[in-house]
Amino acid sequence: MAVRLITDAAADFDPAVARRRKISIVPMTVQFGAASFLSGKNLSNEVFFQLLREGKENPSTSQPTPAAFLRLFEEAKAAGDQVVAILLSGALSGTLQSAEIARGMCEYDPIYLVDSRSASAGIQILVNYACKLRDSGLSAAAIAGEVEKLKDKVRIFAVIDTLEYLRRGGRLSGFAAGLGTVAKLKPTIAVRNGEVSIAGKSFGTAAAVKHLMKMLEEHPVDDDYPSYFLYSDDKGREELLLPKLKEQGKLPLRLHYCGIGPAIGTHIGPGALGMAYIERI
Image 1: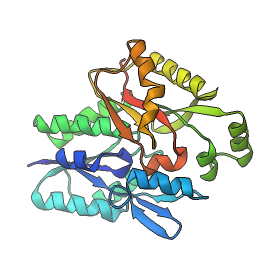
Image 2: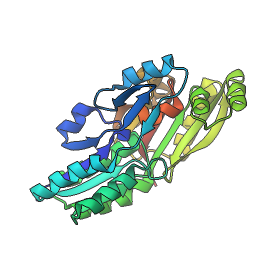
Image 3: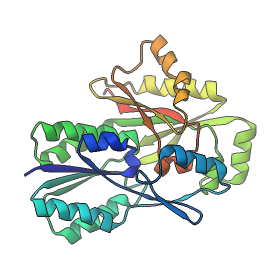
Image 4: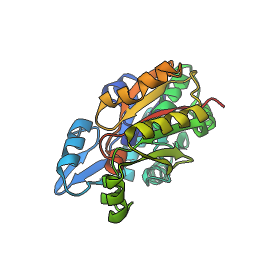
């Protein structure tokens, strides 16, 4: 009886990496006007941000349907396999609810759903940990239990380059967005306990990166786990942060890169940078 690992497109996995590690990705629908795409299927991050820059209004994103999960659950049931699904924070999306509906429809006990309480590379960290546990021979129940223990240590801190996309998405008033543009306000956001919050506000990118480094110092990286440099559309933004961490001897030892996709990119826009990692408690 094998263990199948499932996550959703909000994890921002490289499709080739997911295939190599035998991780199934449930796609998310992204709508640009009349054009409809499936994230990770026929919409790359590069094309997404190009369309985002060109458009005057934000795209809309739709959570995966129960049917998308049910197909994978039924396949596992037919093969007699167990399932662990690690999904986008339930506080940010109805993805988890869709999976719960599908599990009920499937009527198959060894399906374990984990609310990651995170997003993007934060989910990746948990899924990759689950891969390691699966390959060591643990059952689905044991894997889900270990991931539940780890998920509260996942930290994400990021600097947003512009408030425009939060305004477009209705999460910020036009007045506040305009004020932020004039003042070159760069907020630092945090993903904690499944929700996104403002961790600080700085004037200018240099000050924002400095504040980001302060957050990393207050919540240090656990190098027993991989860490990720996050970027929305420009990997070159690493030059604003990583050399400074290296100078201070605080560059994570197991550092990887993760391009932010449509699920989060819709709201934060291009030019964002940050870190996702496990905090050393």
